[in-house]
Length: 325
Ligand SMILES: [Mn+2]
Image (cartoon, rainbow, N blue to C red; front, top):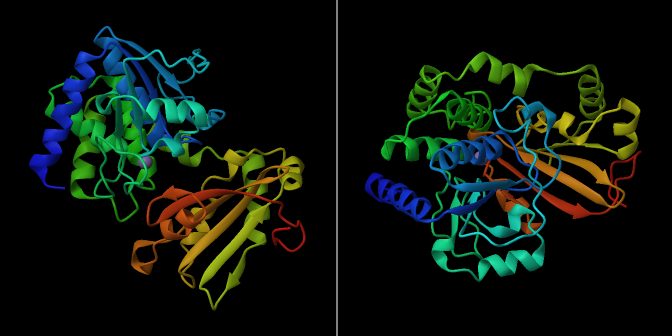
């Protein structure tokens, strides 16, 4: 996207936010650092403008992120009320990814175009007319929100800076992925100047592994199988494994990245049984492998980036073979 068009859109968003008073913010299912960071940063800004803002997250909040300002104390529970002037979806470009109940999803889709805004850096999903959506040119939604603040001359305080740097840090794999450009480093540096503490963010999101985490990682890594023909690394975790290690699904985040980085393969697939009949699948690859895993995720109604995608399916993993039964 050209810079002028991008800036135009960022200005348009400012206008839309400006003229609405009661706003509901949401993001994709299983929110990650970028999803939390972008919604919380926007919330801080909108509240400072005297607006009534609520955030709804679907699924339990990953405790690793509770250090984020505003997240640990979030006491609002959304009960399906649609009485809002504006809906803003961060880090997703269609309502299907949000986890909103189906009937509400269609209700919101019917609202006027400028009542529903998507701010996202994922490839645009078809099906929903997006007022605003950016493709993978940006590393994180938090970077778009950062640009939004800078362009519209909105002050970035320590809380906002912490939220935004967290999203940028996590969506660039700790500044290690190919999407870590010099602009990203400049934005990160500015956010640090505004008070965000990078070492705290890194510790809270990446390095604070607990004993149960390394136990469940051990199980997942030990089970890894290579399919040389398909150039695939595959592993899985069952409900029993989670129980045995006293671990949660969120303790497994990061395992797929390790598998996806294996030199011998083009991509990795990691399956986790999340309930009796539901399986969460994560796919990863690396830029140099030139494999777009989001194509696979889309076949199963999932979504994500060319290098990091996921989907959910119904079924059960056989504990011995790892095959779906
Ligand atoms: Mn993101």
